[in-house]
Image (cartoon, rainbow, N blue to C red; front, side):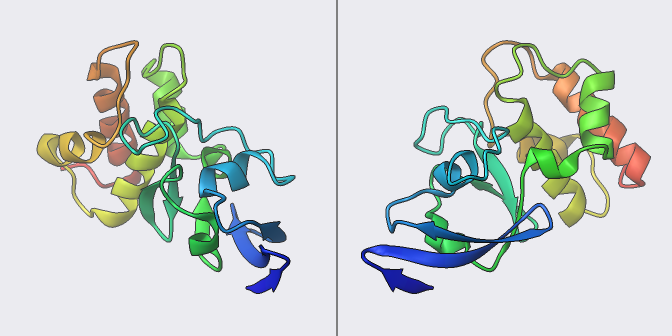
Length: 160
């Protein structure tokens, strides 16, 4: 990263595309994704203190609260947003199982589920519950979300 009058120019790998962007030291990954000519709105500003998970993205295969991660810390990492999961199994199952109500938190849950499936060869109820604990839904129960994750795990061969 090069310093340009207090800002930094960095290389960011977002959903398989490499982008060169100028960010300020205080910019969060969430602000980078939603602004900076990237305009990816899947990661949502919720609590902005790491509690709700609406801003979750996958960074090098692990779920991260993008409101708590500085953009400069994310340079040269693989960043996946819900937009990068278009037409993959997890969002399909969330739609099929009606695992959303208002939808604000849904992208965070989808990304946690996606990361869980990347990092866990066999899932069970306890593993799914543990992974989903990092996110909060205020509108609906968690049963449909849990069912959608199970369905995605089974479709990918991760179910027990």
